Amino acid sequence: MTENQRIQILRNSKTFFRNEIVNSHLEGATKRAGSLKSYNLNPFLLAYLANFLEGKSSPESFAKALIYPRLLGTSINTTFGNKAQKMISELFDGMMGSVVQGIDIEFVDTIDGRKKYCQLKAGPNTINKDDVKTVIDHFNTVKNLARTNNLDIRLTDMVVGVIYGQSSELSTHYRNINKEFPVIAGKEFWHRLTGQENFYFELTNAIGEVALEIDGTHILQETISTLAEEIRETFPPNAFS
Image 1 (cartoon, rainbow, N blue to C red):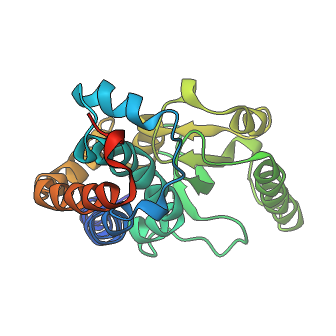
Image 2: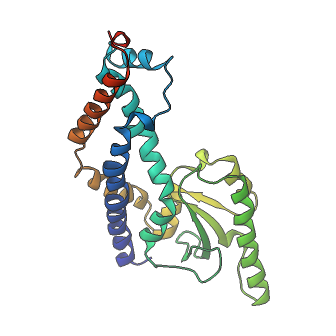
Image 3: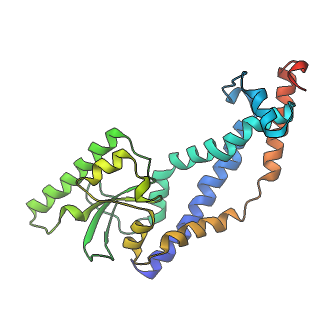
């Protein structure tokens, strides 16, 4: 990878996070979170959670008990997962792309000097059982191509690159792939791709710089107030204390 490609990936990561993750979270998720009908309420737990959070049962504490897990956990993780494939394509933006079906990028591994045929995945738990066969089938296509064209492509040259996480966190599905083809995760993947041992942290820091641009406190408070008002109108007065 050239220095210009390295810089471009960092720029692309900021653009993607700003445009796709932040905007979706602020505009879409918060709007949905302010509507009571968007929740599957458990009436046996809501008052308990409200009191656990704030020591009281009020429309506002009810609202916070619903909103905080949604906006600070489930919602943003779902958004990131749904946009993972788009993130991958925008991060690389055509760089090192492959013409081989099922292969996302081709690059020269800076550790062993071998050309790698790589399928990219988002995180250590982002594939299911059916994906295992799909990945292996694509790599078998590369094997057949190498055999037909007398190319020096070894099994260890076909890899799955996992953008974030650690090898110890890889799911059973990844481990099943790793029995035949290497699965390289997080810091090691980015090191092999860029030649820089700490590029993984450069990437997370770049996205962290975008995070510093965001102050969602006013939107969060508006969402809580909107939901609290609907709760006040929906629940009987004796539900609060």
